[in-house]
Image (cartoon, rainbow, N blue to C red; front, side, top):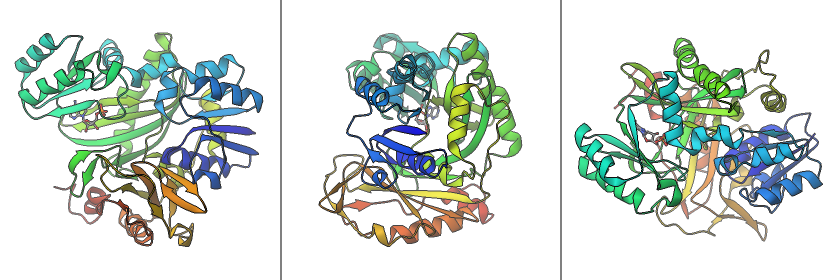
Length: 429
Ligand code: AMP
């Protein structure tokens, strides 16, 4: 098969790594890719949001399958355009990608179909939004409706903070994504990410993962795209997984089909484990980044037939095997991230890390004159497998410590909650 992966971050490196290992894959391209992806795929200089350029390339090269990594091109209709051109594509249509592209759409769908989620209201003007907030009090959550690169959510601890978030949205901080605001009830509990493959009708559970959004140790400091993750998630028991499938995922799949937006692709449910049971925080219409970097190394089966089955409507009798091992990834970011950071600092020591020690997925790098240079905020995702999360953590940090990159930093406590649980210390702080 001739396969094109769209995107150029750590998620796409993990996808390319898994797809390149498939005996079904003859030729693999990645657009635009990065310095690490170049070891698995031929990188093509087409941006992930260049829909016309990607369709033209896939056509010219007679791609048999296009796997779309990021949400932007999915929401913009890349899969619709590829399929209309006769090219098989993995991922939801634009109509189905609205589950992530519009938080208001997602909340209304949940309301119409009785799917458990936080109480909410949608607003196009500041005054009624502020009145709703004043009536409900803090803590309360303010979200830009559209795609805001993970920055559109404010968990406000005071009414004043929530009002300021509403003003920021309507002042254009998030561009068109903030033209509408969703205000929702604050949910307390432990967070969990759960991934399923969906073929329009059937859903095949993949695995759970947990990530660390805050930049600093102890989950302190500003939020980021994710500073590390691990899988499996110890809190996702078999019975909880069944409950999530029965009360959240399958009702969503049925609802989307019934409303004429059949969902195909990977569905990533962000869940809060509340005292009243699991509730949906958000849907993402793609693999998580960095969660993909821990899911792919745990997958023992060939991923390519699974991606094809999701696209072809063939998941009913599909099964995937997973390694019993835990996987943990530590994100290394450029100094200063998530605020201003510099690009172009040199990274060395990567070649010395053997594949059985750790896999170094590249999130934001470029190759120049035989060197690897940082080329983004999140730059590397150092991933290791172990019998326990603690073992995977020790191996990942041993590899991190052998990477020579004065321009970067990482958290030193990725996985702390799971490690404490393994030690019998309960779920933490
Ligand atoms: P989202 O992009 O909607 O998942 O929001 C980003 C983060 O904000 C989530 O991972 C949660 O940590 C937090 N969050 C979102 N919605 C809520 C809520 N209703 N209650 C508490 N925390 C929330």
